[in-house]
Image (cartoon, rainbow, N blue to C red; front, side, top):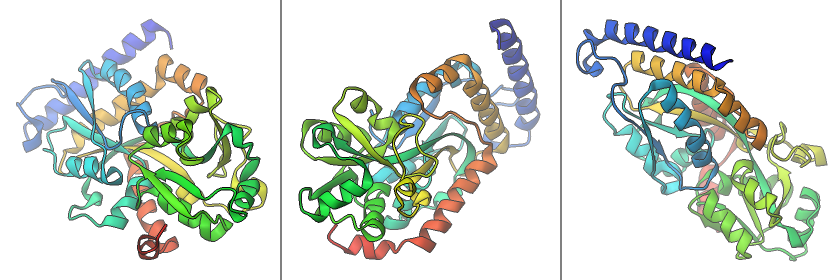
Amino acid sequence: MSDRQYRISRRSFLASTTIGITALAGCNNNSGQVGAAYPSESLSCIVPFGQGGGTDTYARQIMPKLSEVLDVSVAIRNAPGASSLKGTGELVQTESDGYSFGVFNPPSTPISYLVYQPSWDIRSLVPVCTYGQTPYAVFARSELGVEGLRDLVERYRTDELSIFSGLGRGGIVHVAANVMRTEYNLEYDRYVSYGGGGPAIRAAVSGEVPIVATTDTAASGAVASGDLEPITILSSRGSSIFPDAPSPSDEGFSSIDYIGQLTRCMFLPPGTDTGKRATLEQAVQTALQKNSAQKWAKQTGNTVEFGDHEAARNALKRSLDTIQQRINIDEIMNGDT
């Protein structure tokens, strides 16, 4: 799309949005001042993970482009803790005026929700859209020379390796590690947890731990620097960042796609009106089509793809349903690993 076409498209988008929101303003208590266009002031994006991880990386690429489309600033607020439940819980309890939204990634946060069972209802969030797909992967320190998942399993079996690391206990990586223990005979002795992808990667790079599981996005810099190597991509779709890295099924293991692949989603607080949801939904779609977003995706291998609010709703529901059917959460949390 040329700059001139983009300017015309953007004017058309803002004009149609203003008309739609103005029509809704008089009949919806959440619409603010009658006749006022939405958004008319800065937006806040809650990222329930620390800086430097995959979710934060995506947010810091996409939110400036969303800001350009909507012509208001979009501030990113990292709220890590409790395996992403701290920030997600804040979103659930945030005022439903349309000026705060959050991002998280089924099945990651839904797993934490099922493990810890907070008092709030994650299903009450208003889905906006999806904006990417990201696989989890297992990485090893380069000097170890691990050659694939089968070699990794053998090294744990012979006690050459004993520690497996990733995000916090009760989070998706901890659960995936336990699934790999059961399905792949990955016999690690101790699981070491970190508060996000960034800290986990830094621990592996420093030599504090030999193996780490996190998203391909989070580990891309450490692999580029030669500190880490991808061992297996925990999704049969593979990784666009590490296209040569095998998945478990490539080596004859069973697929664990239901916990190996993230869908990156955006949600609004409960009760946010659908007119504001529609504005954000269309704005994200436009932002992802911008040349700068597509260029970043192509250069880094990070997948950027739009799905509507129903796609986000289905990603959350599917995760909650599948995890409860496939995984014994109580057994994992009552174990020592």
